[in-house]
Image (cartoon, rainbow, N blue to C red; front, side, top):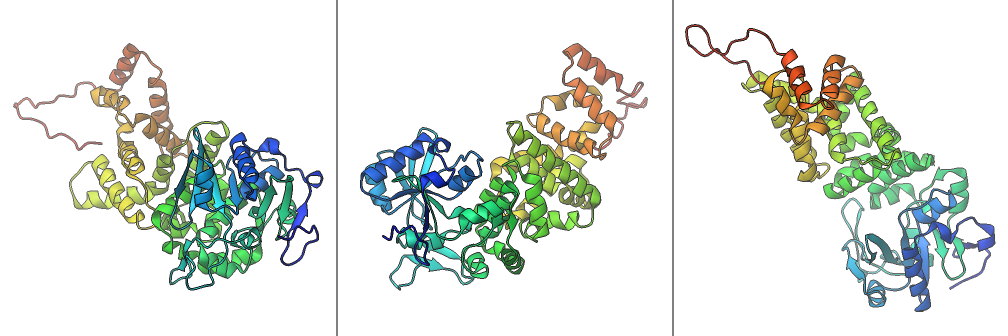
Length: 438
C-alpha cells in the first residue's frame, strides 16, 4: 500500500493526528475495542463514514462503522460476539450488550464475470460482495463527507476525495458521476436530503439535477428499505427540514403520493403537517419518545378523511367506522411504496377512527373514551388539530382538563354536558330511532 503523504490520483491525503480535530474521546469504547483487536491481529482497521464526519463537526457521533481488509469470516474468527448478516452486502456485526459495531470488508467494483456482484435492469446494485483494498473501497462510498477514514494505527485521517474540505464548506458532493451513482442506489437521493437536513449542508448542484432526473427510481427500491429510510429521516430531530427538502426535490411525492396530492391543494392540511413535524422535532430535542405511527397518521389524515366521506355517502355506517375502513384502504395503497409494519398501522387506524368521539362530551360513552388503549395518542392528535384551528378550542380544553380530574369531578363534568330531559323511549312504548354513532 502507498503510504505517501503526498496526494495523487491513487493515494489518499493522509492528515496526521496533530493536524485534525478528530479525537478518540468521541468514539465508543466498543468501537475502539474492535479496531484495536483487528490491528493487533495484523489487519488494517479504520473508522469510516458518518462517525468521522460528525466527530470533525463536533456533533458527538452515535453510530460507528469499521472498515477493514479482513474478510467477514476472518472478523468472525476474531470475535466470539460476532455474527454475519446480509446478502446484498455481507457484513459482520460485533455485539457489546445493546451496542452493535458494524464491520465491513473493503469493497471493489465488480468487473469480472465471476465477481459476486449484480445489478438490476435500472442499474441498481442488488449484490455487492467483491472485496478489494481501501484504495478501491473509497469509490464505493456515496458522499465525499462520508469517505473519511480514521486509522487506528496512527490516529490519522485518510482523505481520497476532498471530503475534509467539503465538510468545511458544508457541501454534499457525490463521489463519481451523480447520474450513475443514483441509478446504482436510488436511496442515495434520500440520504442526500437526510444529511442536508441534519448537517445544514448544501446539496451540490449536479446532485440536485440528478435527483430531479431520477426521483422516479425510488419506486424500484424495496418497500421495506424505504420504511427504514423513513424512520431515519423523520425521527432524528430534523423532520420539518427533511420534509421540506423532500418536497422541494420531488421525492416526497414518490414516497407518499396521496399525501402530496392533498398537500398541493389544501393549505390547512399543509399547516397541520408542519405543526406535527415541529412537534416531533421538539420531542426529539427534549429527549422524549416519538412513534412513526403518529406522523404516519398525520400524513394520511386528509386522504383518509376524504375517502371516509365518500364511503359514508355510499354506505350506512358511523363516522368512526368509515374512518377505520378508509384507513385500511389508504394504508393498503401506501404499502406498494413503503412497507409499514402492522404494529404501526393497527394503532394508527385506531387513533384516527377515535377522532369523532371527542365530540361526545357527555354520558358513559364519553367517559369510556378515556379508558381506550389509544386514548392518549388520539388525544394528542386531536390537540394538534385544535392547535391549527381544525378542532374547537372548547373541545380540546374539556378533554385536557378532564384527564386530571378525580372520578367524582370527572363524572360531574360529563353529567354537566348531558342533554336534560332526553328520553330513550316514546310515550307509546316504541323505541326511538337512535342517531348514528358520532
